[in-house]
Image (cartoon, rainbow, N blue to C red):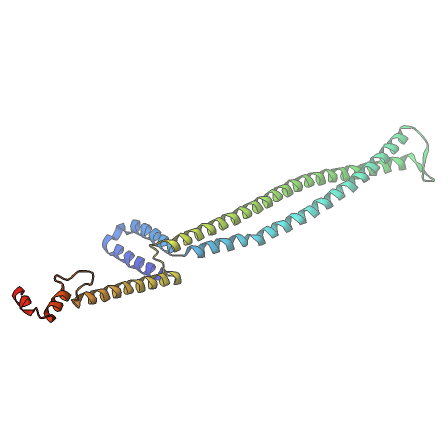
Length: 263
């Protein structure tokens, strides 16, 4: 069926080129659309519905891939949150130590004692300077980590919404396919029960054969009845014009003369 449609379309395109020349371009566009629609209409609905069902099932690998990406991102976000929490703890400790050294240096002394050791003023100031530079670097790093965490959380939320949308769409497509399948089956039921069913299925051929046999039997019955009428026998339901029994009785009783006269 498809090959026949394509062949007819090709023949038609050849004729268009021959007769229309320069105007053939517009006819090509129309013919191409006609061929495409003809081929598409020749595909059985059962095949198309099954193809749609398989396309919906093929969404599963993509959905699983997105789920894997989301799970991996969730792990990364949790790791980043833990890292930020640890850095914040360290920064709070460093901040407290900076404040202590700063407060100690505010009190003028010849030396300062920490952990059982004695340090000069210059040593304490140098340590405070080093700690302060390290603290500012860690603070900038912590700020960057917070920004990264915020961005990754937004990305994670978007990925989750996308996944939810895909799942909802997949469920709706599954419902749509099943509805199409049910509608097709209802059409098949209607075609099966219709008196004007022209399908070429096994059921249709069986119904056609039974119809042909029924017709042949009806013709044979009419021929039998016609042959009975041709024999010319007097129908028993119709009375005879004369009473033949009385005539025979009179004749046998010797009244033949009266019968002869009557005749």
